[in-house]
Amino acid sequence: HLLNNATEATSNILNPEITISMEVKKEFLSVCISDNGKGIPEENRAKIFLPFFTTKEIGAGPGLGLSVSRKIIEDHGGTLIFDEHANQTTFKIVLPLA
Image (cartoon, rainbow, N blue to C red; front, side, top):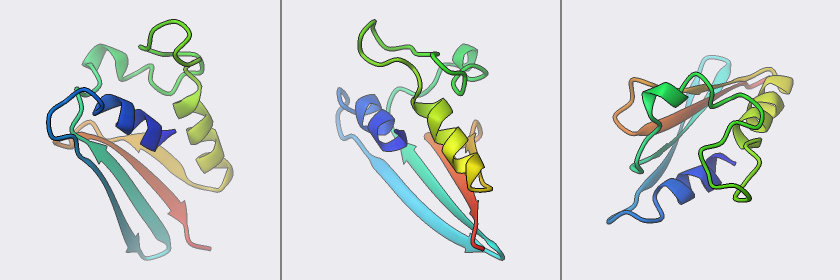
C-alpha cells in the first residue's frame, strides 16, 4: 500500500522519485519509504490512518491502505508513522528483529 500510494503521488510530476531506505538499530529494523509527490496537506495528516479516509475520487479506492498497513505492522510488534519533519512525504516502518 505504501509503495502504491507513493507511485500514485508521483505519477503526474516531472522527475518522480521514490526512495526506500533501511537501517538496523539494536533490535529494530527501520524501513523508510519517501516520495517527492505533492505531499499530504496538514489538515489531512491527523486522519490518514483512519479506516475509509481517502482523498481519492469516488471509486478510486476505499481508503483502507494505510489503516490496514498499520494494523499488519502493529500485529508484528512494530509501528508505522508518518514523518512530518521529513523533506519529502515519508512513512517509517519500525519492526523488532526478534
